[in-house]
Length: 293
Image (cartoon, rainbow, N blue to C red; front, side, top):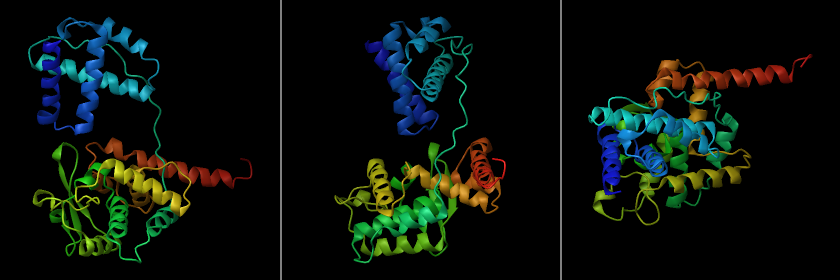
């Protein structure tokens, strides 16, 4: 058991330091591999393809997407063992990942985005309301992931120049234009922003009431709450603003490569999903008015 714990610890270190994966991905992959090893009760070098297939067959509660992630974690783990000289083969190589349908995320209309943004009452000048408005404006206006918003630094926001330096997955940096409305909301928040709980945290842009950086859960709850206030009856999350940002750009004629750069997608194939969302939108509009629908 101690040797197994060491292997998992070393594997997570590899994912974090050498592959530069996010803490959430590292935790998920480590958990998936740990659960498999515990269930299989085999040394990693002794695992065969049949053992993995048998284990996958027992995880009937998992969706196809979760099964695909589990297989990806195991494939990554055995690839690492090969790099470490612990194995000569990857037992996952002969296992096909489950076929996934194309996932089309929920998208807000421009009017719905506006309603959510304007649902935050900033008239009183309360710093938390100004913060919430700034968070929502930047989530949508810059297409940030929620983790990127949590980690945003004041020193990375260039109001006069009109851009934000974003540190994304794998510590990769990108520059994203900052629109006038988002810049104005951020500037107003900075004027009212309290001091951080300690000097080391003072450069973090978005603070909670305790003077510490906002958490993912707090921003998630903010988005859900303001959607309710605005009367937007859709199942949304902070990522919905990112999806909507990309979709609206493409609907207005933005080049796919430009959107890829702004979102920080490693592959253009990831960005292409937004062309399908756009197609689905106009297809639904046409069919709703078609005389032979």
